Length: 316
Ligand SMILES: [Zn+2]
Image (cartoon, rainbow, N blue to C red; front, side, top):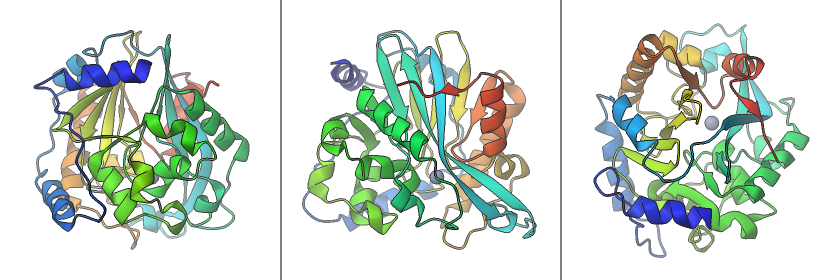
């Protein structure tokens, strides 16, 4: 019910965002993918307008979320030389694998779906921890949520939907951009999360310009760079607390503050777009000290924000 309300409002907004569902047919659309790649290249200057984001956070009817929660369902331990250009190969960086939950008086929204243990095993070392109880908590939270929002097509973000034992139950409330859906079908990030087009047709696939108010207090920001379909999220709680979820723009906040790109050979990114995004995020951190920067994989900020009560434990 609630999700239908979100959708109905979204398509009547006009101006701020345009909601359309692309009429995908049975095969990959190379022209469409080329177009997405081109648009990724065009974001040399990345400057989302904070006032617009704040306004859009309140255009959806209904109360703002009261809590932002996080679950860390796994970790990935990598050499700093892979995480940061020029990083010390002797230094290990512990990357958290997370998903977030916005809690409303009337329901909840989940931001990214994690991945199951079999998909986790495709990444990094086999000794990297996977917290099954936390992952099951995330799965239960997705069953209870009104909406499940996916930031980009990578396995550690969409795998929890694709391999979910509750797929039939949750598929209708999966929100993603049309290009994320297309990448999931045509270029699955890992073999364990291959999905046929028919199964993705139940998802809510949106095509939008720049910003999209997904639900009260959460605005998607188009941010191609890490992948062509990447998004960041502006979040505002009822108590006025603001967050910027920088997603995978940097694997760590250190990438962003030092301006050092990721350095893993398997990661193909648009460096110019990322540089522009780093610049914007650094400006925000300097000029907006009350806006909290969060990130999919940064362990120090995950631990500090949990400690300070600025990110809570997932509710189910
Ligand atoms: Zn990721």
